[in-house]
Length: 183
Image (cartoon, rainbow, N blue to C red; front, side, top):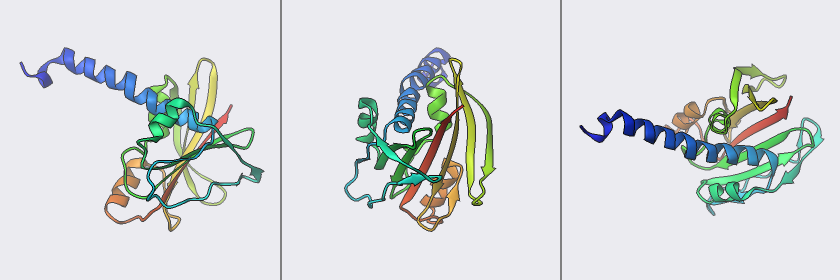
């Protein structure tokens, strides 16, 4: 019986990936949403200015955790966490297609959150966002995210962004914004 045919080994491998890899992704995303320190891994990544305000409120940077800093060492771009005192924004920038730009739902699920009400929403400024509610331990947070390219084209799905960028249909640098609002 080959390794791939062994159901027990496949389950163990699958559980290992879900219990080790996704929690790190989720910790990074949440930590990003709670700190705001900018980490630039790749010196060739174009400088992207941090947002200074969000919806009319001034933003201040938050520090990254040790886990986030370790993750950032391998991230091909910049990472920053900012807050307006009520919401937490995670700003990631990349200058080339990468699979390390994960959707927030994966990160939150990896941390044990239950995801509900996932939907696309159009804001007053006509931008589209992918939004959902994440719940764990009696606490809930509303999370919305989108990716924007250098020409202002928006993506609400990381896979669609990846293939458009890899095919040259979207050019960078790209900015991924995730906004977490406690409910």
